[in-house]
Length: 241
Image 1 (cartoon, helix red, strand yellow):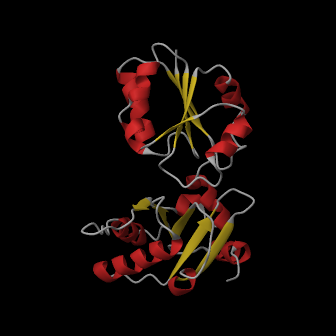
Image 2 (tube, rainbow, N blue to C red):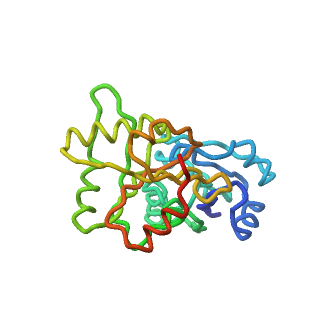
């Protein structure tokens, strides 16, 4: 029996044909639900795959309880985007290797690739940062340390936002973090529903972005030094506010 770690891609119908065939043979199909705001409902995914799916939260995935099924059942864990984009999923595979449990990985498109639709060149991106939702006595600004490092090499900074963050709150947190860290960021790129027909790309001042109503999921990009081809592409692809 085997753990099949399957990337769904960016839409409900972008799973690979190989993965679909494997799912037909699985006894249990799980879905990791906590790393992204899905652009579709779980019910829509079940309908698309024509299969029953069990939803797992963060604790259920990180506890690695699903590995207990491998000795008895053929199981699959579905992941939005690519199967190994999140650290947790890589840890699952590491645990399988250490415990000598069989596994197979099925890759797919992810936000780390789809950001190229902004016109920015992928090889010019630096470290990727994560922005959590601030809470009382928890207002980390560490995501800006990645931005500072990337700025030193003139690289672009991708900021992945927590699933509980709306755009207005994310921009406000970015502004507050800049005040704390002594940074000045005038314009950022927002890409929502990357890779879907409903994809939108914006490149505007922070104040203008606060008033946008966009669909989830979304991420922020702080551009580094732009090549003239990137400037031209970004002007072509971005939406008007």
